[in-house]
Length: 99
Image (cartoon, rainbow, N blue to C red; front, side, top):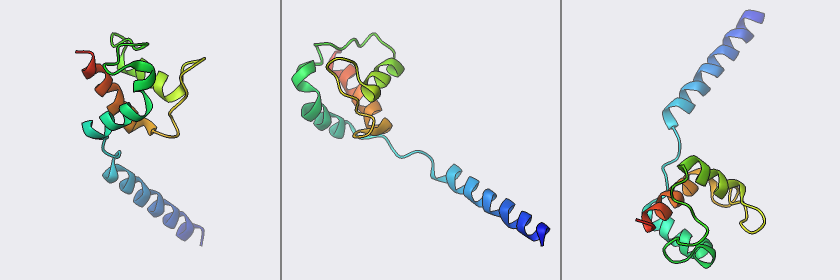
């Protein structure tokens, strides 16, 4: 009986592992989605060309962290409302605006 339970547990774990490996991360948002999000959530504070309170020389990881966690006292955290993929697309879009 114990061997049967162990075998079922191992098989179940293997099935879950394969499912996670084959599905992969969700695709990043498109540039059009990032542009719309920027206009809705960011342009008021950062300007039409991301020229205010945005340093494109910072690493993508630093910018992503600031977007997800927020920057006190003014910038809210967008971790729950945007998520990582949309935030990554938004960072790329903002850097493109500054070129």
